[in-house]
Image (cartoon, rainbow, N blue to C red; front, side, top):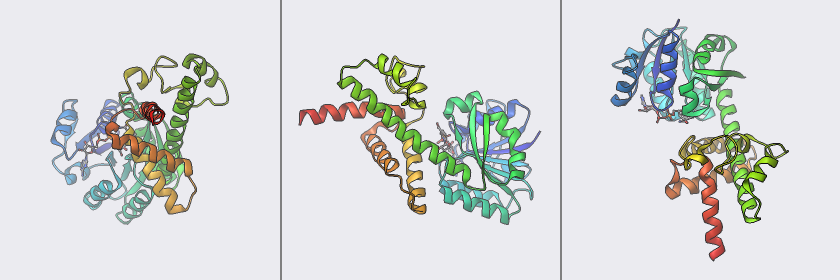
Amino acid sequence: MSKIGFIGLGNMGAPMAINLAKVGHKLKCFDASADAMLATSRHGLASATSFADVVEDADVVILMLPSGSIVATVAKEILPVMKKGSLLIDCSTIDVASAKSLQTVAAKFGVHCLDAPVSGGVGGATAGTLTFMVGGSAKAFTVGAPLFEAMGQRAVHCGDGGSGQAAKICNNMLLGISMIGACEAFSLAESLGLSKEALFKVISTSSGSCWSVNTYCPVPGVGPKSPADNNYKAGFAANLMLKDLGLSQVAASQTHANTPLGAHAAKLYKQMVDEGLGDMDFSGIITQMKTKVTTDAKK
Ligand code: NAD
């Protein structure tokens, strides 16, 4: 069993840390928020008093933080203190360039590094069913594998450092686009007088079939239970979708990739967030479409 330092005990990090402790790993946890540390300590996890305290004895340090700039700031504090030959796993969703630079800086300190963003949300983090998209050396991936197993159901080694983040933003760009597509199909069906039940039956077994319809349908009352059945309570909040679409557009512009639908999806989610709906589930973008259609019709 590994000695693990865990930094970032928010909605995702706390349940991930708890799942690692459940299978017997020895954890020390740290967060900038005293409340977050108190909450995990109630589950029997040890709290650290500083960055040095959380990492100095650790074989593996896991980060679950909000952004690339925060990851870089924390890395600056911890890398000089981490044991040579230990492993740093960054599970935060951050931009590809920052993930690559983290690999380079970690190597200078003799620390192995993996970028390992996740899919599955808070539900997956709690149930231990996350999917990890992992970038870094095969050797580091082998060391991280049992930890991914404790926190998730699947870990895919995507390639060198940065490729986990690349996979994450490509997946979420497609998810954002396909959710908007699903919402448009159901909105058009409503305007045409076609029932949502009939459309769900057709799409879910036809060529338009996709996760956004089959598993996470944006209209209530059809398909498996989804946030649409709970008044669009997140789930995966629109502001997190906007964050990931933003990262995809930064990566596209840095690499001169052509992603017009990704760019448009980012614009639509920005409108949703700007209208104060950032905490709503991202499938709630369908409510925006309905408002827009009604408003436009009145013009
Ligand atoms: P969160 O805001 O709930 O948690 C982040 C935690 O980091 C907070 O407890 C905060 O106090 C702590 N923190 C911030 N700056 C710090 C610092 N300098 N030092 C120590 N601690 C610091 O966020 P979350 O929802 O847990 O998401 C974490 C990461 O996972 C993000 O990168 C997010 O994009 C990604 N993600 C989230 C979800 C989701 O559904 N919430 C799904 C997939 C991926």
